Length: 186
Image (cartoon, rainbow, N blue to C red; front, side, top):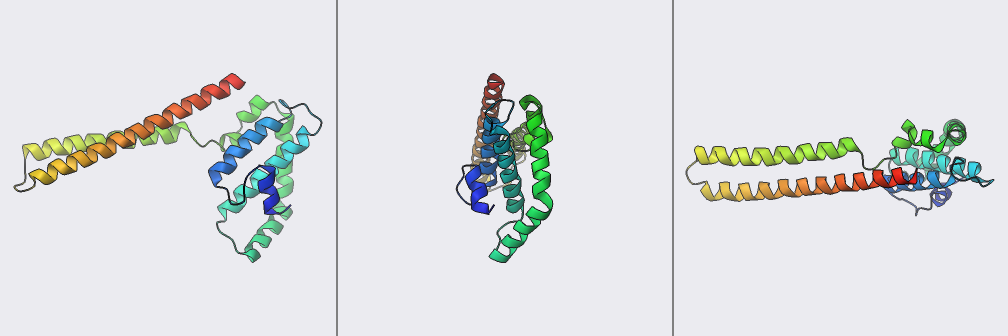
């Protein structure tokens, strides 16, 4: 297969982002996993989707490629990784969908994960705390001539920390909604 065919298998335009590839793989894996889809061609389609995902992720990790590098990677893929990818897909096709979803391989396709959301919250809270404490310290021990600058800096940093906190909250809300939706599907 050529790279455009791998994108086509996942239903993506060429040069889709890593997040789009992961999202498409999760959707297609759920659609074609033999534990959910009992049609005769589901196993082959699941294996094909997994192979496409493996190839696209490997090629994305290599970065932008010229034509010579691309053909070298395709040959390397065919020699070493294609069979391993098919064996992995066959293994996951024989397991239940629930077990497949708990695998490290499937979990690596998560776009929103709890650790990233917690990290975002921590950064937002740190910025907020340092902004407030810094402003209080400046009020206790002012430097002559910086009163306006201190108030401006405080308002700016306070706004940034509130925006960060809001974005973190939105990510948390989306993450919880996604988990709830996946639990309902099971």
